[in-house]
Structures are given as C-alpha cells and as structure tokens.
Length: 117
Image (cartoon, rainbow, N blue to C red; front, side):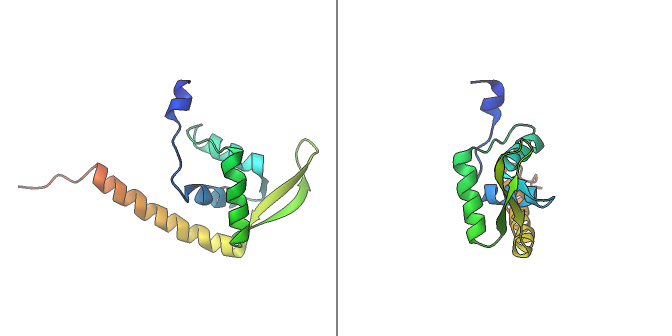
C-alpha cells in the first residue's frame, strides 16, 4: 500500500451525497467525471469507487435532487450525464450547512479552547 493510499480517508455516511451535489453544481457530468473531480479536488485524498458512486447517484435521483440524461462522453461512448435539479440546489445549501455545523462541532472537540483558571 502506497503512502497516498494510506492517507485516503473513509467518507462519512452522507458525505458522498454532498460531494456529488457540490461537484454537479458547476454543470452536468457523467459518473467517471464526478469521481475524478472529487479525487482531483481533494488532492487524491478522496477516491470514490464505482460500488459507492452509482448507488449514491441512484439514491439522489430517487430523492429528486439530480436527474440523468443520455449523452456521449469525450471518448465518443454513450454515457449518462447527471445534473442538479432545483430541489438538488436547495438541498446542497441545506447539506452544506449541516456539514459546516458538524465540522465545527468536531473541531471544538478535537481542539478545545483553553479554559481560563
């Protein structure tokens, strides 16, 4: 196992949904492009496997947060392109707020302010 592989972080449940929604905020993308964007943006710390990505995409479709359209990829192959819906844009705002609260709470636990005597 390489150092880079050891440094990868397991995603908290629900975090993948947020990352997908955020990735699609810039525009439609096919599954491989979504996974690659998450990997590149995280400096290869986060890697999304197909076994996690596609169930998450189907879950987001079921919730009405994204839709899938048929298209052609860069290498001229058929592909599904996923895009945010209006409901998905609103949910991205909600999920980002939840993440910010969670991250702040964890930070307070990991790095508590020095208590004055």
